[in-house]
Amino acid sequence: MSTTAVLAAHTEQFLAEVAQLVRPLPPALDRAMRAVPRHLFLPAVIWPRDGEGGYRPCDRATDPDDWLSAAYSDAPLVTQLTDGVPTSSASMPSMVLRTLALADLDLDRESAGRRVLELGAGTGFNAALLCQLCGDQAVTTVELDPTVAAEAERNLKAVGHAPRVVRGDAGAGWSAGAPYERIIATFSVDRIPAAWLEQTEPGGRIVTPWNSAWCGGYGTLVLTTTPDGGGGGEGRFHNFASYMAMREPAPSTPAPADDDGSGPPPEQVTSSALSPWAVAGGDLNAEFHVGLAVPGAYFSWDASGEHAPTRLDVADDTGLSWATVDYDGQHADRFTVTQAGPRRLWDEIAAAYAGWENLGRPSVDRYGLTVKAAGDQTAWAEGTDGTREWVSLDAAVDLSQS
Ligand SMILES: C[S@@+](CC[C@H](N)C(=O)[O-])C[C@H]1O[C@@H](n2cnc3c(N)ncnc32)[C@H](O)[C@@H]1O
Image (cartoon, rainbow, N blue to C red):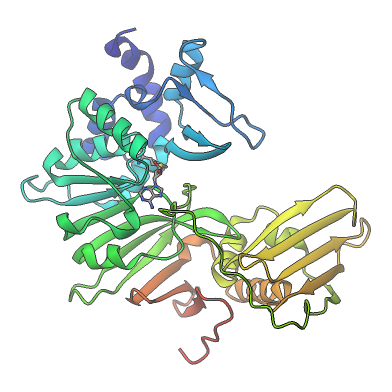
């Protein structure tokens, strides 16, 4: 089928669907979206979500109609699986548009002399949109995976664009092209890497999806760097965004835990009035807060009935601390909590949840991040009266003196 026929069949409905988060859609974004056919950026086999928390293969050779309708659906499409884990994807088009809108690309500006850095080239689709919006000369995109980078370059060339595609770790930005007006990440982070702050021009903008071990990917940070160029900045989180996490350039081996010979610390069994569903039951605002305030903690549900009718398992990324929270199937006001390790994780989570309730249960768009220097990043939540409560991004740090 010709590109023209494909676009005619899909574009209007597709655009209406993907513009839902950016209304009204600025004409330049509308034009860019029409000019960049998404299907030309997808490999022959893609993995849309299967509706049950996993992915299903979709092969252009065996089911071209399914493949094409997936291409023109407002859904993220995994384009590379490594050992069953998604390692590259074509982002959800409505999120791509929204991120571009949040980047506020100053679209009336002449393209000469512009500098925009995209992080995570993936398929090259977003880089092609950036080329449409700012001109090929303005755009650099960085991709860690050399195979993915080569594919992105090919896809971009096929639609007539030639931005600079750099192979490397986007955590280091790309200093040779700095300073940038905008740095736009298409994977999520839990801290702004120092290089991004250094490479953004004073008063420039960094837009990045956020993540935490507890909440996964949720929230997009839009941070403006300080006009004096001091390496700091401030910004707000916006709701939505569920992007894969930034990959490490090489597998990192966790440092072995210190063994002082005294054996594991004793388990502590208590009871708690806090329902595990309050913090891990799908309220993304509560989970976002817990994710910020209890760094490194993550959870999984155990409904096997082996230990309790329902159990929430909690652990932290050091592997040293853990907690279980058991529902006995009858009493929804008291839960049995067992904790062990240097951190009392459930106590931290309960304190974080109480903090969130005291703030009036803020939604993600009432949070922000203040960066004084790369090593000094603190999140905050804004109360209804505009006062800020600070939330440390470091485990167990007392901010009462801030
Ligand atoms: C969601 S995909 C990007 C989508 C892409 N912008 C598009 O339009 O198709 C995220 C990409 O970021 C890349 N990535 C993850 N960590 C990275 C890192 N540290 N440096 C560079 N690229 C990275 C992944 O390999 C993946 O291709």
